[in-house]
Amino acid sequence: MTRNSLLALLAFLSVALAACGGGGEEAGPTAGPTTAAQGTPMSTPIISDGQFEFPDKGYSVRFPDGWTPVANFLPGPDFSVDAFFAPEEVNGLQPNMAVNCEQLQQGTDLNEYFNAKVNVVKQVTKVEPEVGSRQVDGQDAKFYRFTRQDTDPPIEKTEVFLVTEKCGWDISLTAPLENPASYRTLFDEFLDSFRLLP
Image (cartoon, rainbow, N blue to C red; front, side):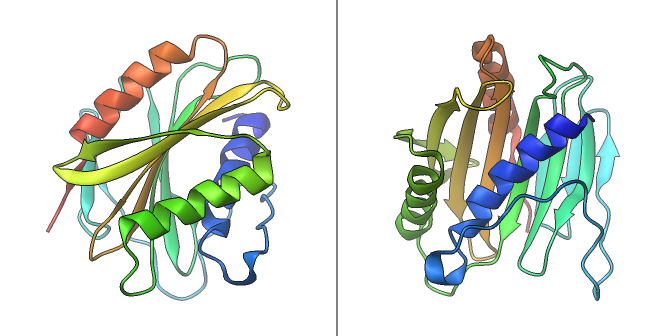
């Protein structure tokens, strides 16, 4: 992982996490990988032949050939992010996907969760994201996609959201703006393989 890829991932994760914080403050990006939060030890997933299964977090997913999974890449008291990194670097960015299980206030529905995230993106990036709906493992989900020309390198960001009793799920792709269609295809396959576990 390069420093730029880590910073890009963390910067956009902080955008996503800021939506559920109080008072509307923006969370700042972290300079590098963080260590596990003090207290509860982090559990580990079962990884075999491109299948990533994390019973403690309640999901499984198939990641692309050659990609590297990093469990508990960004842990926190109310969220936990697993990241998946592409083998290649494009203009200093290592494309990546991430799965975040974020604790929500009881009664938060998909529309509230999604609208809060979209509002943060608009405030922080000053862009109007493309929005839409889709299914993830038979569940209603919503997504947004936007590009950032002002980053180095320019990127495309896609985030898909669903809400279950366990948490608010944020499944994301950060890809270089150069040839984003190939990464969208991989991301669609990633989403199609995503399964919620009991």
